[in-house]
Image (cartoon, rainbow, N blue to C red; front, side):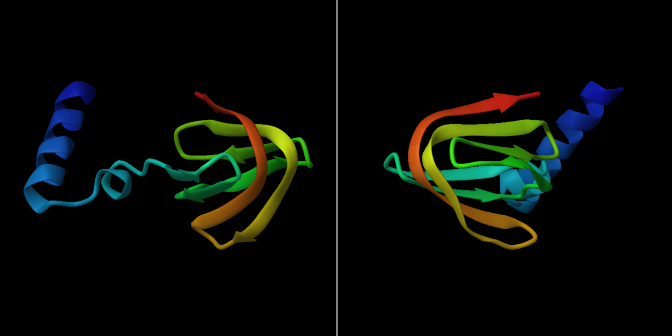
Length: 92
């Protein structure tokens, strides 16, 4: 049943030309080089330090590891992070 619903939802999304991240409530990450990151469609900040930032999304967690990490800005659906990124990990 869930598989049928998923297929229906993807077909509808394609027909209506709705962006995938919006229709499936996926997070969208835009990385510029190794020092700027923009995350869209997140739920909350779970942990924040200069070496680690853990973001909760609808599908799991995003862990950013590095040096001098800093949240530049955040709104209810978008966040900008800067620093020297070493690793970005997606956890279910």
